[in-house]
Structures are given as C-alpha cells and as structure tokens.
Image (cartoon, rainbow, N blue to C red; front, side, top):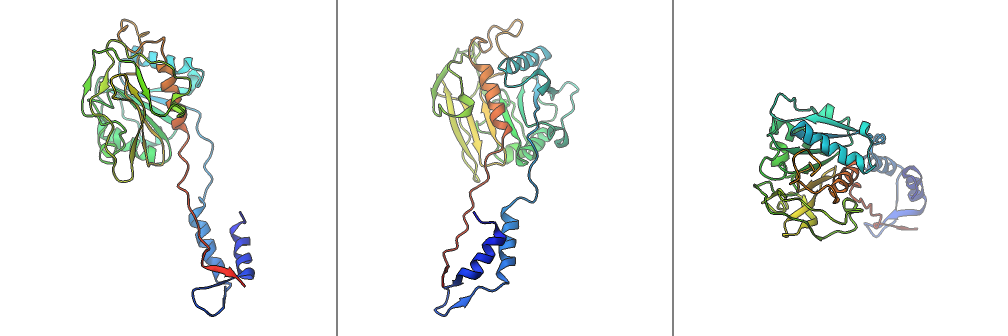
Length: 289
C-alpha cells in the first residue's frame, strides 16, 4: 500500500470527485485530510517488545503455588526466572497495582483462601487487559470466589462464576477448537477425584464481548473458554491449578495428564494481544479523469 503522503499526491494527479456531474479537481487541501486519517489509523508509538515475565496471582497455600509454578516451568515454555509469584490472598497480602502488573506480559489468577481485595484486584486487572495484556483465570476465581469491581461489571469473565462443585472425577471431553493455541499438545486431562469446576457455564455475551468455548469437561460443562472483544486476551481454565504432585493431594488434577500444558499454553497465548480491528478506507467516490 502507498504511504498516505504519496497516496495524497497520487489522488491529486489522477482523481476527481464525482459527487456532482461537473468535474471538480481534488484540491491540495485534501492532503491534510489524509494526514488526519493517517494519524487516527496508525498508532502514535510502536509498542515495545512483549515482556518476558509472567506472574501467578495466587490466593493459595505456598506449597500449592509452588506446584503450579513447577508445572508451568516443566513445559519448557517459561524458565523459573520468568515466573513470579504474587500472593493476593486475605492473609496479609498486598493487592498489586496496575504499575506492578504492567511488568508482566500475562498473569494467571486463582483463589482458594479468598482474595485480600477482590474489587481493587478486579479493577486493576480490567485496566491491565485494556492495555493489551493477558489474563488467565482458574478455579475458584471462575467459580464461587470471583473477582469483583470492573472485572465483574465490565463482563470480563468467560465462564460465569456463580458457584462451585467437585467430588466427581472428570476428564477432558469434547474439544470445540482443536486448533486453538491453548490446546497445542493437549491430548488428555483428568481433574482427579475432586475435579473442581464452576456451576455457571459460559458467561452471556454482552456489549461486544463474547464467550467462546474451546474445550469441555466430560460432563459437558466448559473446561476452557475465551472472552473476546477486549484489547488483551482473557482465557478461563475451569480447574484448580495445583496438581496431584502437591504433597498430600492425590485428589487434584492428575500430573500425568496435560494440565501443565493447558496452563502454559494459555499464558503464552495471553502474552500476545489480539490483532486490532480491521479498518477499511473506501475511495469509491473518486474516479479517473
């Protein structure tokens, strides 16, 4: 495509308006109009490289969080140094500011002990996504203990967090989008005898935001879903992140299945913002001499 400055000159030489029968030559004053259009369509600054680090925002026991980090690192998608742990539970934790979150390309957020401040965290994560960063949610943030504030009122959940259930061993069911990046290399998943999940199903579509099912549990409820329509990716993984390798918790998702890949893939996918909306500029009202 010609640069806008060259396009303006080309139009001045080769085209004229056809809004009236008479020939009206395009005036030089049309160039500022194109420059104004260029200013609106082209970002004023080119974004820098995507940060290499991710964060685990966990309202959970340290041993549980350590297992989640180990599983993500075991996939080879991230090194240990690239994965930070930020406690966000109601046991003396400080809710990360937007400036803190901005140091990371994507975050995984889940809850077991209640969030210290679900409203402030929800506000900050909504602003974080609006800047083009990615958020991956998991149980119980997707279930009985959701983020609130702007995260809730702005419709950022892909899975409706209306309640939780468990104690029935579930496995990976139908995969609606087998070619989705989150599902790369994922062939099996067993939630263990607990198999915690949300009771809410996909969140309803609203205000230009859509919940897209990626994969289901064997009982038909959503296991992986995405919320589209934001500047950044939002992916919900409807399982509890710690695995059966957590000491004393053989009832969690089975470590010999692909839960680690689901988490790592979702974070890699969330790191890269969605493409901007396609913009078409029509020159249909101009014709040749």
